[in-house]
Amino acid sequence: DPAEAIERALWGAPQAIWGGEVVTNFAIDARLAKRLHANDARAERYGSSHWMLDLVLAPDFDEAAVAVLGRRPMRKLLANPALRAPAPSSAEHWRMIRGGWLSQPAADYVLDLAASRMAPGVLTQVQVLALCIAWAAAFGSSLGGNEIAIAHDGALLAAGGGPSTVEAARIALDRCMARGHDCRGAVFAADAFFPFDDVPAMLAEAGVAAGCAPTGSVNDAAVAAGLAERGVAMAWLPPEIRGFCRH
Image (cartoon, rainbow, N blue to C red):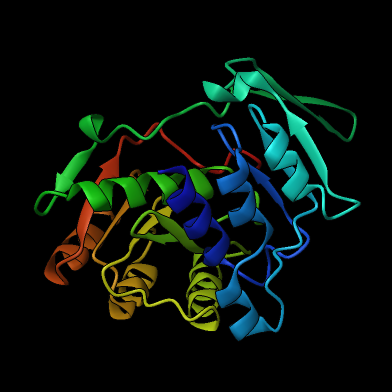
């Protein structure tokens, strides 16, 4: 449901979204525009009901939606019909480096649980949806590398990155706590394999129920055994899959 998707996205980080940008793959009508404009519950917690979004990008806006969202003078509304069926680019990616250029394949991998090794147990549909959200956040490597993303019940709770996976996980967990989110029953996604059991132990202690991560570490078996003992269901991705596309 589009209205529910908007609510869960905005409440994932209700302070960080202030002055932020929202992109949807569905058209915005008056009902959805009101959700994007303000929320009374936000006023109770943060002193203002307005989300203060600076940009909303969607396939289309009807006139009533423009009237609602246009109340913020500097807000930009951009319509692009192609967003109704977005698809990742398969073009080769180039980036400038000192003295030349670096080429790498497009970061177009879509989480495929059928091609993953599942252990232990079977994920619920709610967990699968959350896992897709967490992987999408971690896979983009937009937070500095070693991303850990945590999602629950159709919403991204937090994501973190940093010089090490330990720091990335700590940031993600700290952000969950600061935002009032409970990690119990949540799922996580890591953008690369776990070389040690430290981060899996942190996540399990926080209460996560499932996760996904690439494989390829010499300690894969020990890490997998530790998570299984803690009752964390895992989707182990093929070793050729890596999320750190910006390294």
